[in-house]
Length: 233
Image 1 (cartoon, rainbow, N blue to C red):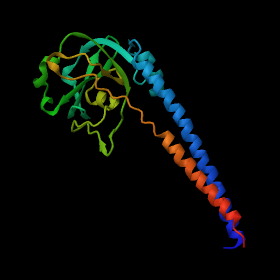
Image 2 (cartoon, one colour; image 1 turned 60 degrees about the vertical axis):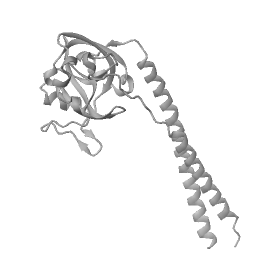
Image 3 (tube, helix red, strand yellow; image 1 turned 180 degrees about the horizontal axis):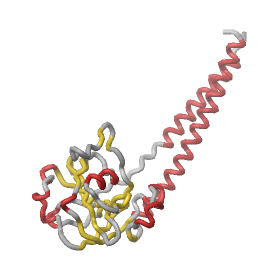
Image 4 (spheres, one colour; image 1 turned 90 degrees about the vertical axis):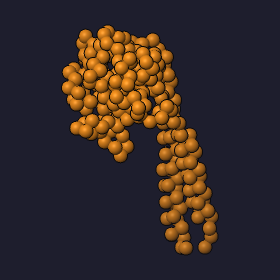
């Protein structure tokens, strides 16, 4: 290999090392951000519940600021317009039961909890479909548009793989529906179903591993560049 080619390879290795180092720093910054996010979410989950945001505040609701905030709302459930969303939980496969809660000012989709496949028919859990005013407390969740990975919601066939608030509200002809939904807490329902309080709050933290990988590759690139410079003709 000529000196010119060695120099070109060495320069390329140095450029690669700079890029890899930048990726490592970016992962460290992402890790700091993730820890701040986890701390914020933990604070919301354990805070006293606040009133579910009404129409005048919907434009201010965001995942960054409001996801997993404890909220409460009072109204009456429209069990005749419930929606079953496919789910897999620690209790096995089944469905989330999303039921509109008609409050004095707006309609709120509430994920009342999980039911197994043999409880899909509302008649098998009629005791849990209480009538009259109820107060729901739970975690505010942002909408899950379109569907799950490789599986799209099909409103016409009433097949749902994600909790797409806008699509469900349209399919069930809900008026003045909130742009978010609420995961109900673990307060037992009569008859035992649906089972609430199954929200999983998990933020995988692989950023340190990624950062160390990028820094290791950066070190290899620097070593390669150094060896090229050391070679004599």
